[in-house]
Length: 225
Picture 1 (cartoon, rainbow, N blue to C red):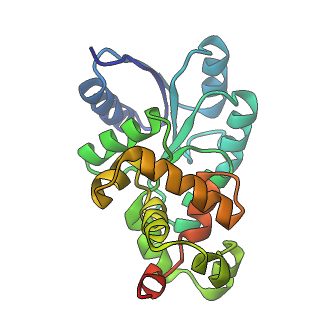
Picture 2 (picture 1 turned 90 degrees about the horizontal axis):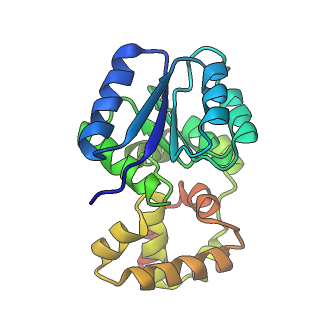
């Protein structure tokens, strides 16, 4: 029997709430869905529903003031995972949202199957990043903001083994450990060991920091060796 989740959809567009509710109802049968349309009521819902498994949060609904609303929600309900669901497709906004505590970022233009997969990844405890935005951002981001992203130094990248580089490359595309294991044809436990080694070698504390640091790396240059 599939696990049933309790999910809050916080979005001021009724049609989108209906659409995402449909995605959850078909992909996560038996789940309880709560809807709200502004930040204040979302905050109230977290107080009366401390058993929420996930909050799907729109960046532009009333009371949000962009990422400030995310920060407020994370401060008020730090134990409930929050994923941003937005029409925004700017790479810097996506990465900032993760930096400020979101566990994922889903664009409203995502196909239904991709939304379902993203929500599943997040409910499994992984971070979800839209790989298409991360890739296009790499081409469009200027050099000044590239320095602001705290990129990994060539020396640190060179300290990684080829297999670790391959794992990091797939992490930076937003893939879960399970997806990486499948794509590289290795065990998931092996992927976890590689991730731990990568974090240690890069002197970062968690997966999100590694992803942020590696989002602009041209892995082909390092995988040639």
